[in-house]
Image (cartoon, rainbow, N blue to C red; front, side, top):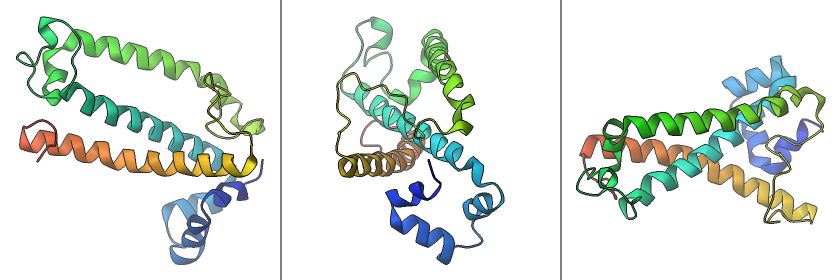
Length: 171
């Protein structure tokens, strides 16, 4: 596993980092400690995946709710208010997130041996990951870009919902 593989996913990123923004923080980090690059990519993929799930989880309850009076549209009119209205459920959600996070510790500890691509936990129960190397590259780039978009989207959605006090579409 080589460092240049990261720039193969998106050739523009290598050009912009090295030539247009040579004083950027990421370029500085890569210059000073290139061995951390897989960890940075792992973190970016993890945050992107979490943001994609959070975006879905923020919009879906505006239309579909779990059965029960405490989860009804009358009890919690806006999804942003669920955090304060359901503290017991928030504890349970944080517990499950912590368990899932703990399952990745072994993979992160082995990151320096480069026995796998960052973000690849060999978990594909539906067999959606393509076999063709060119399609794999395209799939990874799409996941990376969608994750970046989702990180920005969830920030905007939470901010819009908090400021406007309204539900979806938050303006």
